[in-house]
Length: 303
Image (cartoon, rainbow, N blue to C red; front, side):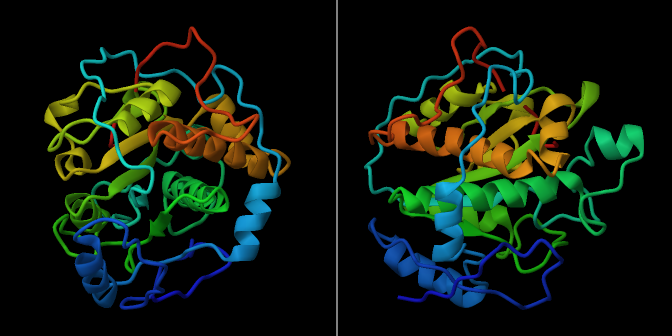
């Protein structure tokens, strides 16, 4: 089994052709044949090291109050996830827009940069991608510390024009889901009227699962055919909008005193929802659903 780990995800623009490789999920039929081919092509990359995973596991997560991630999408929920998944189902986490910087579909800059003239978190990528990467890595690190068969994929190139290029999130996630795994792409939604709110867009090319339902209970839900079906859901990838990149959520992420605890709190909510969706018992004190009364709704893949 191939395994090369790094202490952190590569936030800087990857060098063309570069990649690192992480553990391969071989738990379901077909994955054993599929993933070595994908790895040989581009690599499963940026898996946090054991020490980094331990650091995430020890970090006290921020106790997320109702409304921390902003409004849930005020859209009707027209689906229910009923299909059970095996507890050992491999999970692949993707950072939205990691393959589309400097081209169409780069993601949101966030309200701080666009409206208040703040400096981007990193000059060569949109702020959304910066937080997508940080959040995705935290989810994988925390999930591994709790025994989940979960891994992270980061494309080796930041500006891939074709969505069907074999190195893109969409291509890797589509193949992973088709082989029996669960692919989840992390996003933050656009600020202001262009954004909608937090929530899950379920895959639309397969029956909707109890894991999809659990994530929707924790964050809200978009209609099954939101905007006619976005690229990721059409390919079997669940798309999770954490929240609009503005207000309390963005301020907490940008504040160096609250940043790590905020990311840890968001990761805790996601991992707890994954555990519940797979029929696993979350550890005592895990943060799963928001308090009752926040509604069931979700957001745009453009954010």
